[in-house]
Image (cartoon, rainbow over all chains, first blue to last red):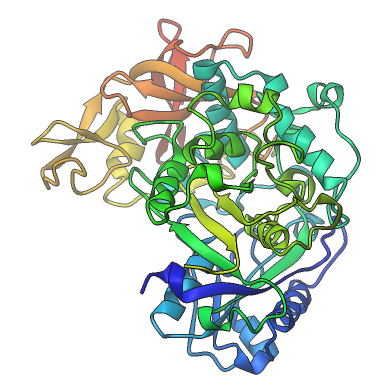
Length: 393
Length: 148
């Protein structure tokens, strides 16, 4: 059985998000998970699987502070299957693994969660020192951190400059990503930043790593988001629309590297987007919205092109036409995204996709949202899901 | 950042954990050489270094001196300081080496001002020694001098 055909997203929940306030990450996690379980129409005793990404990360305070075992013990769950994927095609691999486990008969109701304490995790640390605290490096990090690429911001900036060089993207065009998302965030009561952002403010913001300024970089927060992935036969037992999974993209077809891919600008996004469209009869024209990873403002642009929403190099003109806006033909990052609503490492974008498909998005609700894509990751890591209102696979 | 001189400063640079597989790359600078793995069968340059050629899967792979010459493929001016070992501003870029289309290496670009750097700028490698590791940096071709 295809993983897509076995499972639905039955329950969702997101905590309040905050900045600069000490929080207990396990408390946040328990709160979001209990709400997601209730939303799925279940009792905690019905949960028999947990899937996380990336699992506990010791070297980056607050980046992923909760271990699966902590959550199991807190809730007293009886599990038949659990895993955390530190390596994989982006943040959505927790959902993909849950679908695969259900298809394989190893679990029936899988709790997926992502908790961050990246705002409070930085309290007391030296100002501005936000990168790895490791002093010895293995794997691909060793090929950029010691050489001056201290942060993903530096790598994304290099990517952005190359894109500008090849396709003539301007900073004014790039600014349309954070500006439009801030507009959407004003309609999201749980967004960190809701005040309007204008071009003048953007152009005069401090540079982080040129050509990226402050507003091109997403916002560290504390918060937790949780999902329950269930067997598809539960889809009519929920009291709300089930979220169907029409296509999974979780591929890697070229180097696991920011620099060695033959096509420097393609990212892992290209690989997973091609895989996802190859597993469905739906087409880009069927999409009602796109939730695209925006750790940095260049990433949604590269995802748009990888997903075939716009031709290669044409994203600047696409943004000027306003097709990505809430009122446009294909609204993007309708919650404000990570740039304005806060960084839940991709899973906040999945939450927004589900909210839109369930017609629960309040003032920012899109009319008749039935098909949407959520795509997360940057550089060589990228994965995507094609989601539908109800499951008709 | 320490005020006690270079040695103290260097200790806070996050460094690669050198293995037998990566030693040639990270320590080649001791001989003034950029040693990149190369397949003896199909001549493919392999980076990061690995024990097998991903192109033809030959196991006949050897660290091989590369020219260290190339051109700036893209760059950024790092302004926000993310790490105490890397005072800002500095020019950070990715250099396309002349040996092979996708053979690109990150590094700090020295002796070129933020106003003068451009995509396509010809550069050559230099090495900055930290402990027993030789980190790659790049200088404009012709304006190079060895830093250690």
